Amino acid sequence: MKLNLNKHDFSILWDGVYYKALSDYPNISKWEIKTIIDFINYEKKHNRAVEIESDNQLLATNLKEALQHPDKYSDILKPSFISECTACKQKGCLTDYLCHIAPLEHVKSIFKSGKLMSSMKVNNRPVDELIGESRNAANDPSDFFDYIMFSWGNCQAGDRLVMERKYDRAPTEEDLSINFTPGIRFYFRYNDLMKHPNAANDGYHALKIKDELLISDYITAIIIPKTYKDELGDVIPKSMLEKVHYLENDCKDIWHWSEKVYDYIKSIDYIK
Image (tube, rainbow, N blue to C red; front, side, top):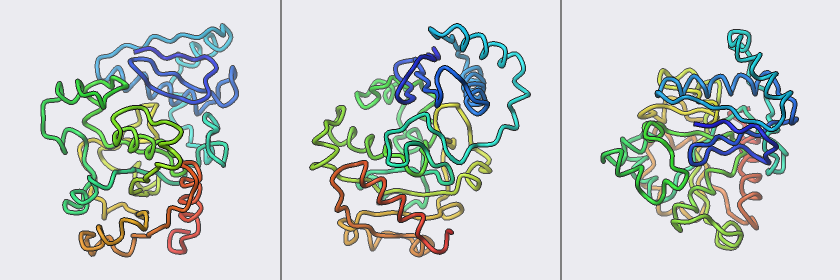
C-alpha cells in the first residue's frame, strides 16, 4: 500500500494508493499524523507494508520524525471540524455524527434484521468473488469487506456510492443532480459508536465496525426520503420508529441534499 502526501483536493484510497489530503499542505496537523499512524497500524495488522511518498521534502522529514514517536499522538482528540475536503457547504467535515447510507433495495432487509452488516455478512459469498466484481472499482483489499463503513455526518460520499452502484459506473454530473435518488441515512453519535467493541480506525474512513451493528443500540436518527414512506412504513421495527424522519427531496443536487439533511439533524430537539 502506498501513502501519497502531495497536494490533493480530497482524500481517496484507490487501487492500493491512499491519496491523503492535508488541511494546510504542506503543513501537517497532529490529528493528521494520528490518522496516518492509524493507517499504518491497520495495514500492518493485515500484513501490508506502507510506502510513503511526497514531493515535499520538509513534509516527508517532519512526518518521518513524528512516526518515530507514535505514542505522542495516541491521545490526540478528534477535532470538531476537519478541512481536508472542502466540497460541502460547510467547507469541511463536521464530526459530531457518523453516517451510513444504504440504497432503498437494501433497507428492507436491514430493517428486518435490525442490523447493519458487512458485505461478507450480507452476501455470504467467497471474498474472492466480491473483490472481483465491477462494483469494487477501487480495488479494495479483502479485509474491507468485513466492515461496515461510516462517513462524517455532513458528507455526500455515501450517496455518491449509492448512485455508483445504481448505474454500475462512476456517476455523471446529471446523475448527481436531475437524476439523483438519495439513499437512506442512518445517523450515530461518533462518541457512542467509537465505543463499540468491533470499532476500528483505519486512518481513512471516519470509522468502521467489523461484521455487524445492532442499530437500536446506537441509532440517533434515520433519514428517509419522503418518496419512500409508503414502501418502508410497514417494515420499520417499532424500536426504531421514534428515530425515523421523512424529508422531501426538493434539492437540485446531491450537495444540497446533504446540506438539507445535516441542517435537519441539527434541528432535532431530542438529539440537541
